[in-house]
Image 1 (spheres, rainbow, N blue to C red):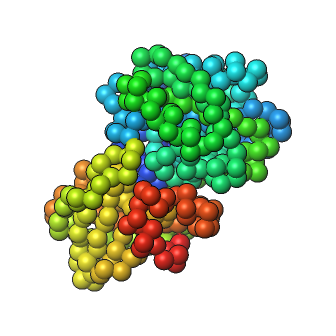
Image 2: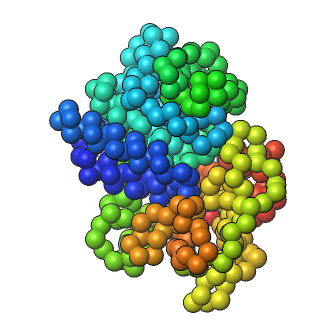
Image 3: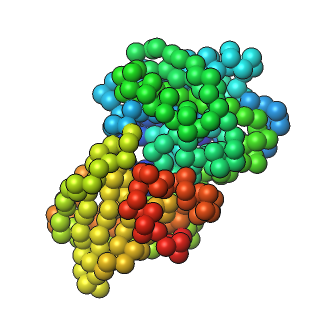
Length: 361
């Protein structure tokens, strides 16, 4: 499948929808870089299934990894992933035949489109997260026991490194430290594997899922019709319309290596009189209704503007504003005991581990 410029814009909308309100700026900028490249070079990105490749073809996962803070003001020049892939291919002794997004949401879902066009190789319609998780070892590849490395990384000023590492948790710590040394982020190439392994272990269809969601959000349909389509096509299980009453910062510490932006937001569902509370730490983590947990990570929680169902961000959480809080399940594998331990590590989020009840899916 060849992706048009409108497809890229639709994928961007879908990527923001599944991003749990993580900062949208880099996602939008990446979409702009991609469509500009398409227009300037009269080309398009190619989206394929893992089964379209030969079983032994090399597929590499790529994505931005930051230093635990919001991505820096040092913007990508556009060739950083090419350098990382070159370093990794040299180490492995063979070229990549397909690229995989590190996350099935936000900026990393769009990264392979531009790199794929630059290299003339396709994007595989899959990913290892199905949403956004903050740590690069929080993948279904880790659950499957696959190696994260070797890992290649390139920073914003062109410096590159190759890390001989296999264990995903160790790769997380090394790459995160390297991103800080680089100046805030690294263009990272990791989880090299065969197309057959992608077919067996990845979350399949994640890019086309973003495309379907984005087409709904970018359509001219009324908000109510978009909500109906999201329930039918995207698996949305609940939408709560509520007005912001209070926004408060919290004193609890942030997990190591993650942005320190904990806060709690109280809203009121004016139609039914319910009190809604959002728990936030770099993303929407939990929704409570009248003090009872309605949804908690690894559920996907996002916000839409009622006027047109466009994706809202944390900047829209101001007192008096009306928002639609949207809840849908993550990938099935995140609800297994092993998936929950990886998605919500006990040492990072005691709050969530203590409140999860297993019936939120």
